[in-house]
Image (cartoon, rainbow, N blue to C red; front, side, top):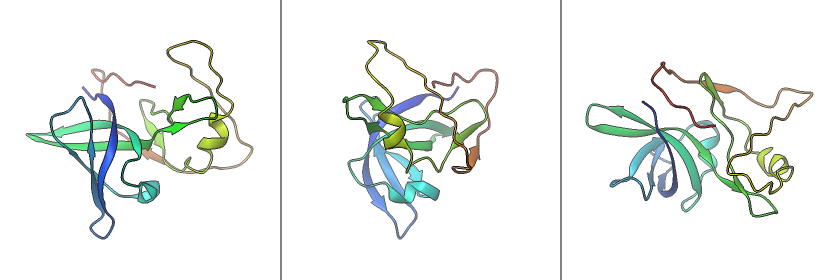
Amino acid sequence: MNEEFIGQVEKVYPEEGHGFISSLCLQENIYFELKGILKNLNETDSVAFIIERHNKNMKANLVRKVYTNDSGIKFVSRVDNTHNHVDLDKFMPLIGNFIKDYNEDFIEKEFTFDFVIGTTECIQTDISDEIMQ
């Protein structure tokens, strides 16, 4: 089953195309590939990610930057059971300011644009996966 975590970018190696994320929930730093919009991540950025496990190795997948809006509410682009929107970075601060504190633990907002805003990254899931949106 895929698990979603929140962490912090510890180290970025742009020339090598990868970096490492730490999370209080994990005992070791997790490798991730710098691709697409992730090339704009900086050390100390907060990120949401899903762990892929291959034998004894772990890799962060579907890495998304965590934003904070003007009300201090943290938010992140969602991942559904088929894809992740990878080019939303430039729109997230604008979208986030529509989110107000409704005293709820979870708020889902959907926004429709009149133009193409980006591409998607397909992900493989199965019936046992629990996807947090």
